[in-house]
Amino acid sequence: MNTVEGAIVLTAMTLVAGGAATGLITMSQAAAAQSLARTVARAEARGGDGVALAREIDATAAVSTSHEGGADAPLVRVKVTKDGALFDVHGEAVTMVEPDGE
Image (tube, rainbow, N blue to C red; front, side):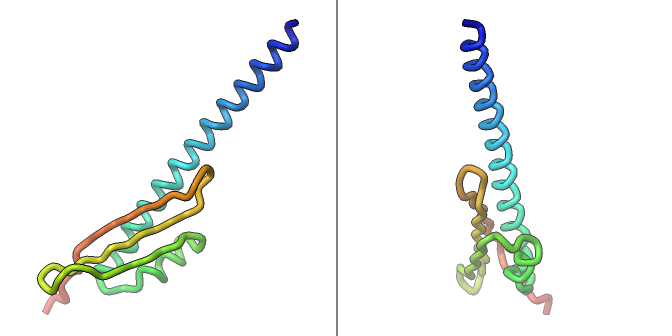
């Protein structure tokens, strides 16, 4: 009887450890997606090509940018989607467009 209980406990411990590791990896990937969204939004707000920058940093991420707001408060919205270990993770950032400095 000891081997059956041991096999069940070992299987349960393996599943819990694997699930915890996969969850931590997914959380790490979500944080990376959010960080990439902030970086791209900042580059777009300064007048650069944020999508090209995103391709250099992470070629597997899907990045979309949009310019919103009016002339008095122009905004840049960036959405980043990456494949995660458990599911797709998303990051989003919004920032104001910086003035030209004239």
